[in-house]
Image 1: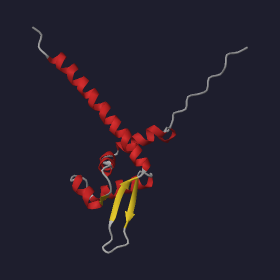
Image 2 (image 1 turned 120 degrees about the horizontal axis):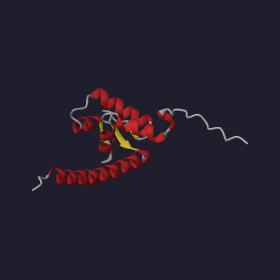
Image 3 (image 1 turned 30 degrees about the horizontal axis):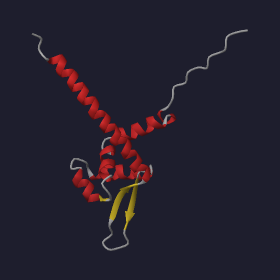
Image 4 (image 1 turned 90 degrees about the vertical axis):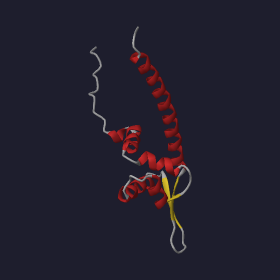
Length: 126
């Protein structure tokens, strides 16, 4: 009997891996920071602009629209005059924020370990 044929390896597209897709989304400039600022509760557009002084209004609008489309944020509008619009995290957005918090904690530990390693390497020998 012959040996089994191996399946050819097919390159995966990023959207074939959900984690790659989300990492790509978070890798877009400002997405993680906008998400982080929404974790403190509902925010008006102007509040987010004040919290992120280097973001342009156009980019903030794009980021909020992307987060809303992905189900991470919710846009709420009042029926009063003047109209008030706030953005807040959905349950899915809050879950992602928790993952980012864990990633931050992990990165802080790694940074401390790297810093200690570099200090030992950089100390002059006697």
